[in-house]
Amino acid sequence: MPDEQDIALNINVTTAENITAIDVSAKINFKMSNLLKFFNETQPITTTETQPITTTETQPITTTETQPITTTETQPIEIIPIEKTYKNALLIGCNYINSEYELRGCINDATNINQILTESYGFDNIVLLTDETEKKPNKEIILEELKQLLINASSGDILFLSFSGHGINLVDRNGDEKDGLDEVIVTLDIDYITDDELNSLIQRHLKKNVTLFALFDCCHSGTILDLRYQYLDSTRVNKDTENLKNFETEGNVIMISGSMDRQTSMDAYIRSAGTYQGAMTWAFLETINKHPELAWIDLLNRMRYYLKNADYVQIPQLSSGKELDLMLNFLSA
Image (cartoon, rainbow, N blue to C red; front, side, top):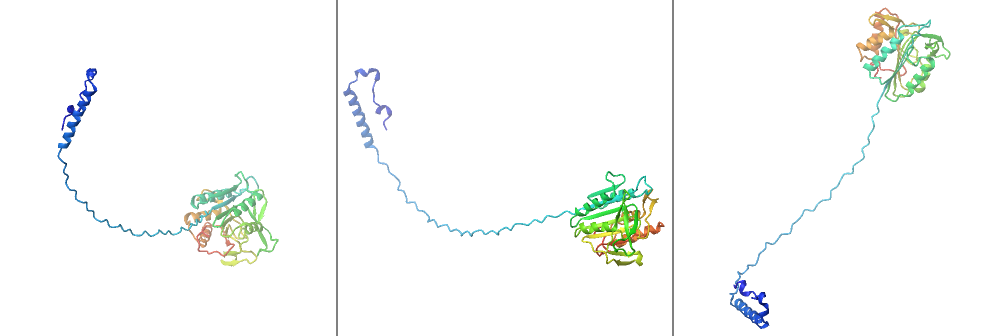
């Protein structure tokens, strides 16, 4: 292969004026003839015969046919809200302070019941009416608070009503009493509320499946709510009795009285407590403090036992607006 110097045009630019067109042409012709001679003398290029490329026949790819995905239609889930049940109470204690009818233990009854309902039985809302509260237990206020207790309750709720104070008898005016006498509670303003009025409120406003338990620690209170069914009736040698003149209640009503209709209930100094209380309320609290899950029949019998053992002659009575299973636990019905 000729080097680059032989192929290059040998033009001396510094003496370009001495170079003629013939000289340039001759040199070009000379160089080109030499270049052609070189290429003519070059040996032919031999190539290795290329073998044909054989390819393996590609098999077609078979695919499994994809089955369409079927989905089960989701049914909407019905969410049923769980309704909360409530335990509400109206507790009334009248000492009639600075009056000729003054008592000593009724405010203590209300506050002691308030404490045990809150601490041991989970009551949510308790209205307390005494001589010492801002709202006083006068007739109109008691009737309104009892009405609100009843109308604000819903199915499954448990209500507690207690009254400690004076109770008296008046002549029966509508003929529903076996003994011809209405039972009456005396309010702080020295007015009164009859058993007929109390029963009327319950009949109008107590709803189905609401339970009202009532405790009346006052004189002549055996049938203070005019309920139809009476259990271990002390006027009938502890037999269960029924007053057909009284209607059944829509909801469940259970009442324990401080005494029989013809008896008084004692406002007493309780030595073990070191203070005054209603004797029946003391027996009630003593019983449920020691035996919180007693059946109704056992609750009544133990209360009677405590009172008799402490030389009180009053005999608490148990009654209900519907037939009551006496083996159910206290405050479960």
